Image (cartoon, rainbow, N blue to C red; front, side):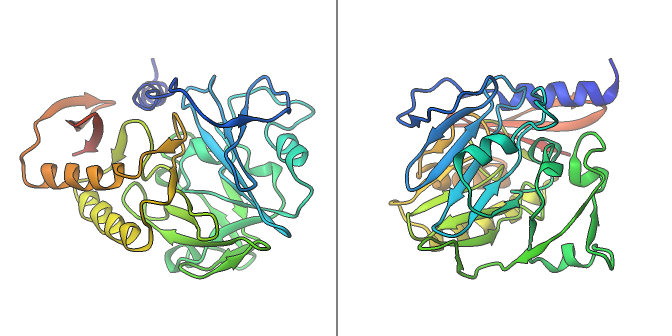
Length: 288
């Protein structure tokens, strides 16, 4: 088995947990052989991929005048007339849509070419890597696995920590490094919803070096400072809804690891050393 195949296989296995919990979401009347489309309230839809190796969850947020698609899916489904996810979005809304990715890993951007308006978070290190004609070239580190997409044209830069009005719906983008440097969350201030991407979800969390612990803790501190227990949290894999107290549990987990109080299992994955930690039903994998 090739190295890349092994890498993807293990990555998939570690993500596929907590996918069969009971949900109180309302199913839409849109038929799809691949996507499980749920109305999660406040003109917001989750697009789950229960047949995906990753069990991805993408989101559609609707305002009165604009819409945001948060991630594009794993791309594992069969294309119909050349499209895999955009027809679903088109059935749900006729508003102008901006695609925004929670981060750049391969399983969150595989249908990126289906969207004509792509937004990036206004982060200086991303802007510095864009060509004069607004082309961003993805690196192998950006993608984690594979070589698609190779590049994309950035149509707009969305501000960080600044109110963005979708039309009677105010959101903010928050940079939450830890899983990746460019990771962002969408904070819906109007409806008290937070979409956290791969920073926190119901599954094994991935840290790519020990320094990520410090970044993760800083991001938790920032999230806790702007959220409260009335917020509903949503992740990008497994069962979408996350219990709010999982933020504080994650913080305690990271402190446990940092203080060498949590035991780990040492493994070799695709030739690299990883430590796997477990704590109160959570699991973190850290590359060494």
